[in-house]
Image (cartoon, rainbow, N blue to C red; front, side, top):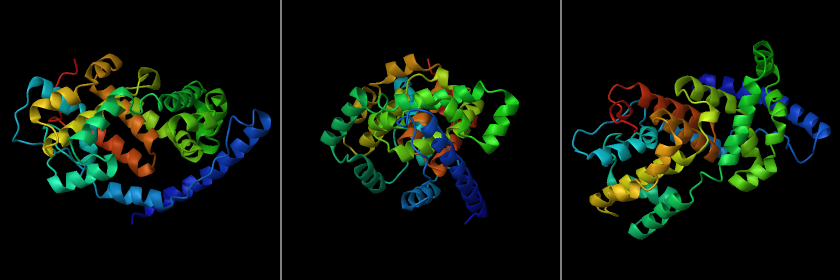
Length: 310
């Protein structure tokens, strides 16, 4: 195993102590319900499984099909699914995924509990009418508040605090960080949320640097649901749950909301990454989401390059 993994773990362990001290200070100085002491999970079984699972993904490069012809509408919807397709190692330019049917069938049954047309339609309806975009929005706004506190700190002080007392920025944004309320709304545990917000500066800075998307520009997380809807519709076509002619109708149910919420494909990726890390945060997941979505921006053959957003 790469020794840098253990070095990184020791660094994070040291920072965890600083976070705990910071939260103890805050609890004494302010509303005791506003902050919960940071507890490092230590990379237990879920983290290990997550790391191993990501290591098995064939996503070192984008994958392309040469066998399909798509309509203009289908091209746009397949491109909408690309953030998840790139992450999974699927084709980014076709309705078909390039995966074996049995492997795909097993995967969506386990993760989505989709195994026939009825269960697909039920899940697609949930993504359109509800999904997770609203329940995750307050958490994203809290992360944005921490980023705003960070950006408003003078540069020299920011460097010092980031190195020695990173919870300083959470203290500045404490009015937006009621972890109990965020946990109740998002369905995430307080421990998960403290871990997510504590590590948010790295990936929020990556969104700003590589995707040209700052938190104020991402006011809606509909991409998190829309990308998954388009992907699920592709899978349903491949497995015969719906006909190819029905693909656009199902996959495009959130298309107008996506076009209204974002300026370009880069912002779609940024919002999808934010939703994906709120859903389940880990170092491995952060690395894979950022890297695979950056490939969509940099690869000359990427549909992001050839399919107009508007």
